[in-house]
Image (cartoon, rainbow, N blue to C red; front, side, top):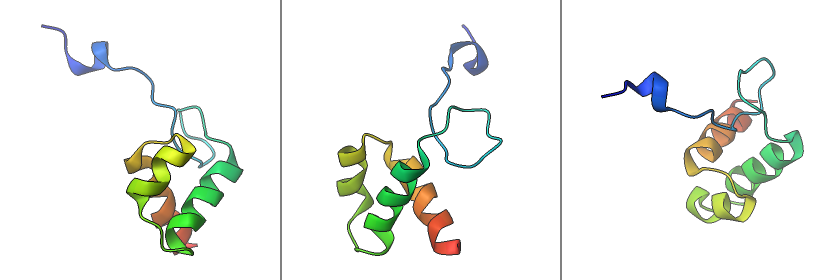
Length: 67
């Protein structure tokens, strides 16, 4: 049985600089996070509209709230 490291694929998430993953365009991160935080839309509703994983959008929204 292969271990998780051997079977996992790179994940294209994150807006932060210096991450080892391919970053999403900053405008996508900000627009999606604003829709959740400022407009009060649910992350479950917004994530598919932008084609991003729900958990990634939650992280962007958290970072956006924190400034």
